[in-house]
Image (cartoon, rainbow, N blue to C red):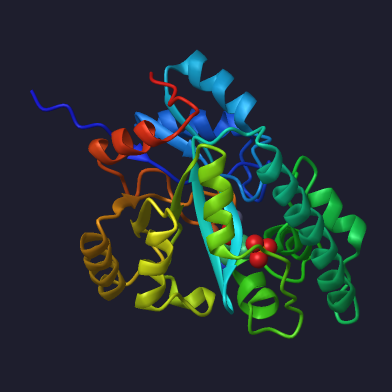
Length: 284
Ligand code: AMP
Ligand code: ZN
Ligand code: FE
Ligand code: FE
């Protein structure tokens, strides 16, 4: 009999901008028939404890991770970080700075939106109740609650996109520096959805080689925001640079249509990640 191991390496909880609690993400992973799920909240590891508890209780494999906000020249780059030491002082300090600046940036965006629509900063804080890391999805939820838009998608399309009038950038460290910090913390850095053209500018081919040189471990190739052409391009870049190839859902609970397990990662890739990280994979 063939045993297929189902591994999804990118999911968000309400520690950042997902709608499930960390434990619920793990429970949802089990319901979706996954053997292993990675919890990768934006710029925080606050969900790790609860996720680990549920993973042990339910016998689901867990990769403790994070999705770090970075910037490469003028391109916003999300960096998945797996199995690092969450107490590494330099990384902890950088993440605190990113989260602070995320909050300040959300505030500026809300001040702009308030000129045209009936939402307040308190509405946003109410939507972000348990979150350690504030993002545009929380603004979207406040707009939904106020009846301005029907769902997060419409909020992004009409009001929150990078090209929209209310958009404000937030601070993010250079991608190379982030890779350094993650490696120094014993973690494994993988580029998240680097071919998602609808999110804004994307990395040019030559950037991948530069990042591989400073310690990038892999590329998330299989992701719903990638066209078939981008999947082909990224697979070829990974092959050429000898980088790991991952696939994942980028699950956000009810906030997005992404379903757990819609893209998967090969078992040998997870083994390679596990071999490079200082935090163990919890095995079911
Ligand atoms: P931020 O990090 O605050 O700039 O917000 C970006 C985050 O918003 C992404 O990481 C996604 O989680 C989420 N996002 C982007 N586009 C959409 C969309 N169309 N609908 C719902 N969430 C989205
Ligand atoms: Zn998100
Ligand atoms: Fe992302
Ligand atoms: Fe994500």
